[in-house]
Image (cartoon, rainbow, N blue to C red; front, side):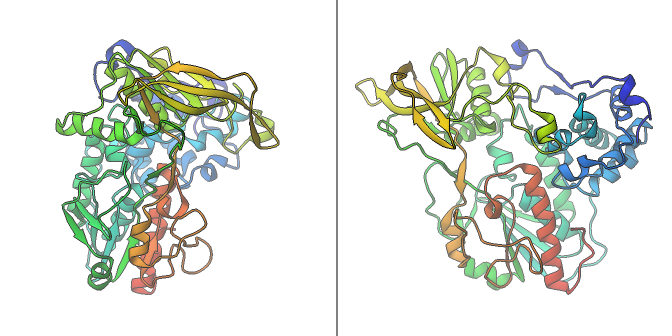
Length: 489
């Protein structure tokens, strides 16, 4: 694939970034898509490796060598068709996926891997630019109706697949916009919401009906979870009105930090900061949390924590410190040991580079300190060490850090339980919807006609995994309704 000697002739070329001092003044995307010539050069680096491990490293099994070769040859339209054959929304994954495909790239064994994600980003942006991404309405209607609860990437993928084979699909979303955490959780500087909106318009032209501000089941949901609902629909009503239901509501309950002082003002779950900021950018609704001139501590070292870091810098925070409970990973992975699997190594995001981010590893938060008026002013922590998978505190390592705002970004534990209870769906040991992906009846819950896909079933995961599960669940629902399915698995 690509140019036979390309991997020896050309170096990996990263996408460009807008300068930090400029991008900190706005919330727009700042990653620069490859030029036509640079995309061809990167496609040329794809080896004729025999066994493309990248295909299997990608959860949606993108046919990566094929579209790399097509990009190298300048066949943009064909590359887009191949890309769309496995991935409904490469405009999402090309922007925010961590690219496990690149970790599995054969060239990556002893050199820089092919820039697969940047090529994917290029292909889909070229497709929109040229007007090649158009609605694909069904040729005939089946008369079957499917309800999808949740409009994140799993729900959107399932909806599009089912609509294209003729089913009447209605998507229910409790937020005021479509996209799930893509819409309100991920900052605009990583994913401009116009990218979602143009997909929504495409899907509406294909027959999908979106109903926002509608909550299914119990309206009372845990604090820290966005809920713009003005209307409630019961699970019983959905089961009565629709021939099948797919639960794709994500995993939204944040992992809390039960330490003294958690209740102080200034200590927030990460999405209590990120969602209002998205609403301020998109809708002009002022974010009640402002960290300008404040000392910010982000607890949690993943993507959500990184989003808090980048947003804090755009506010003008005085300092940003990020804590991670686990020890610092190695700067470089041991490739002979881990390839082609996702490696544990130090990862520095673009947000970390937007200021003098202090990153502390193997640190546990012990308590928050208040200023006498109920506001957090400092944080007490201790260094820890890990041995045989067990954590212990390092004697005499306690310290205190100024903290005017703390954001808890330690991940999400499970979906909102009341939704599953409303449908009578069994839960697994982690509180997720219980549904298998093996054998017959994949994604089917214990309730007849009710399916579960994405984070609501597998737990907190990647956007690309949600798209995979949404597509696969759609095929199972189609087969359930029609007896057979031509949708890809």
